[in-house]
Length: 140
Image 1 (tube, rainbow, N blue to C red):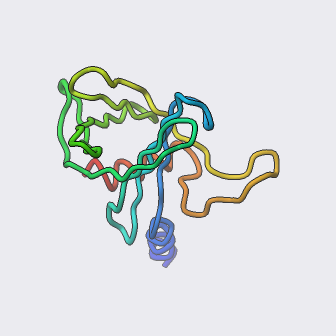
Image 2 (tube, rainbow, N blue to C red):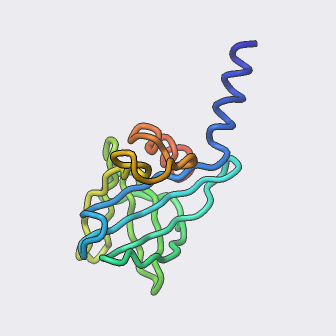
Image 3 (cartoon, rainbow, N blue to C red):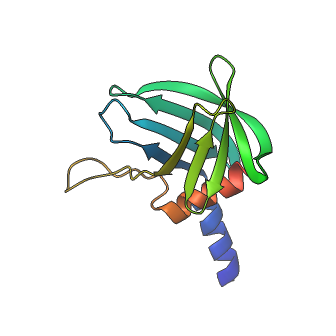
């Protein structure tokens, strides 16, 4: 009985989740951010934001793959710009095939800071939960 309750609770916890990863500092020109969404137990959408004003773009999932022998998944930005997303521990290395894009993104906390802001219910609450979202919905 306890196992059934745990399974239901775990499934409910992933009804809708987002794993947020970024590089740079929010509000600055070099900031970049990827959001990997799941909904109803399936991969949902991917968003990419960049720059001081965090201009947001929709990104397409382009399937699983490998990059120089490492397991990854591919994403397509507008303009048919392909990127390889390579999980490396609790971080994501994101590489463009032309080698003009090679960055390591870390899990990004979304929520109140020093009591200011709102709690994000659907956000992965730490880098381990974010890794579960990536592994479960984007690497399978």
